[in-house]
Length: 438
Picture 1 (cartoon, rainbow, N blue to C red):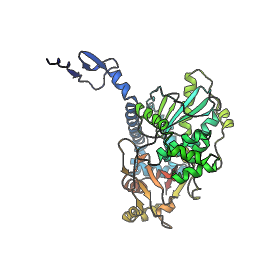
Picture 2 (cartoon, rainbow, N blue to C red):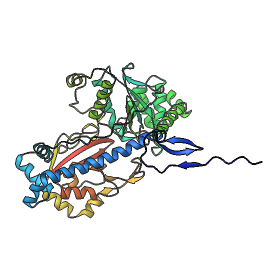
Picture 3 (cartoon, rainbow, N blue to C red):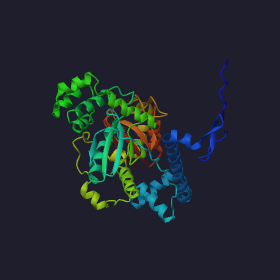
Picture 4 (tube, helix red, strand yellow):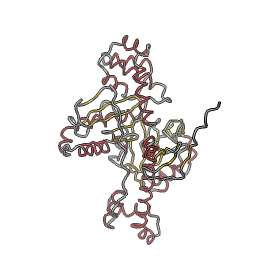
């Protein structure tokens, strides 16, 4: 006797269904769009954000054409050259000139980014930093070997200081498979926790230059007063592996694929975040809960913006370069580059390319194992020295666009634009450099 065949499955021909619309049927029972989307909510938001960023960039180009295009055409120059000339004549930066022009033209922008989804994310039994009874919880999934996680630490500490009673931080482990030292470092931190030293050890692991070898794990423990023999025994026996693996399993169940990933009161934020972005999310969470939002003066009094280089920061950059901003945000100053020097250097692009290296790196979904652009050699009097770059710097973004495989996009931008913004990773910390070429 044979079993009866299973009822057939059918897939509805729809691509953008209403939440309760059926996208499939199994034996006559519907699978709704809402059920489907719930399983990939974070990935769908990532796509929505990419779409927004593309539209926002194109909208700016369209507005520049509408507002400044006629003047550029009358002068017989490109819009970029027109902006450069007019800004110089007015004694303004290019960005300030464009902002003023948009204001005079009555430009208002209604395009807004999509709201991040709210996720019910567990804090497990992980250690808490800040006020344990705070109404707003930030859950951060991180990897001790990630330079982006390292760079977010001063941002998070500043945020906790600005909201001493309102915010608590729970940091959970998500060691990426390609980071060979991340798993043992996470286990070592859990071993340190058993001796009551989780946060000091955590902070030591995230100090630059980020050495996480076996000897360094012991050295960090000794330096902060943790019993090294106990920590090594715990590590050798993998006593903390289950705890780390449980965190990573939760991350995968949520659909996470990159670090850092942050949840502010459940609100999903992918990738590194600036202080300003986190502050805005905390304020919004307080409002949703009907709680008072601290005034700017109250936040500043609680956590003034740092005026000196913290002990955990990398070595000072050359005097020609601006200091780092939070997680590679808006630069605090602009470097002037000679147009003559730029053109002279760009005349030999093959040599500039030879001074670069192209190691592979995991940049998240869609970019796994892509080659990044790292400065290999800095010649005295050359372009990279004038830009304030150092050997080992990874040039990650040029005017917001990822720089992959070769330096062509950097060279093209320097050769064609009056101003260029470059995001550089230096010893695990992000630096934003703004250049004015004149």
